[in-house]
Image 1: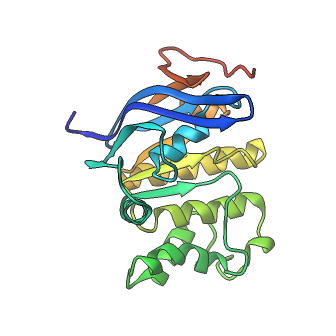
Image 2 (image 1 turned 180 degrees about the horizontal axis):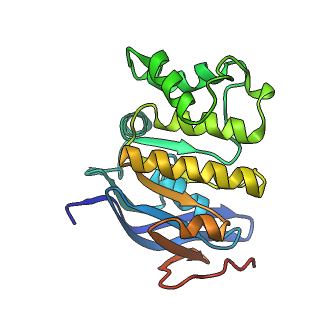
Length: 233
């Protein structure tokens, strides 16, 4: 479809173990339209994060292809994949992954500076204002709470205006109150930016905020047509 920003075609991921080949993903076919919000749910070990890493051009499938904003990832070398990530994508991690030696402002500025954005500092300041951290711009990550660190990570994710934002358990390291606040900020900024959002989560409430929910079980992906509980294996 013309308005699909992500398409995966017969995507498979197999790894070698002492017991032989282990199939993590088996024949995943997925279409995500531009501007959609999609949650991937399922028990631990079902392949959710593996799929997210493949879709975000951070890993290579054993077979199959991913079409990302019209670009086929099959056969791209690491340098070409890095360009795709820099020009089209952002990623929010459960563990925040801020640079310890940089201030909140510098962490948000970093992707924009690497991309050659001239007003990186002003944009970073504006984004930190949006996430309620205008008074913490000069603090190092170790001086910030978990919720504040994830707010910095959200601001950083949006500074280069990505077409697709991937989030792996974005509220997983936060308590319920902070998790709800972070989710509010994430969806508000995503809506303002008209960004496609694909997230992995164990949080059923967070998943239901997305337009679509996809259930991963034993390396297979199915559409959820009614509220589903995430059952751990």
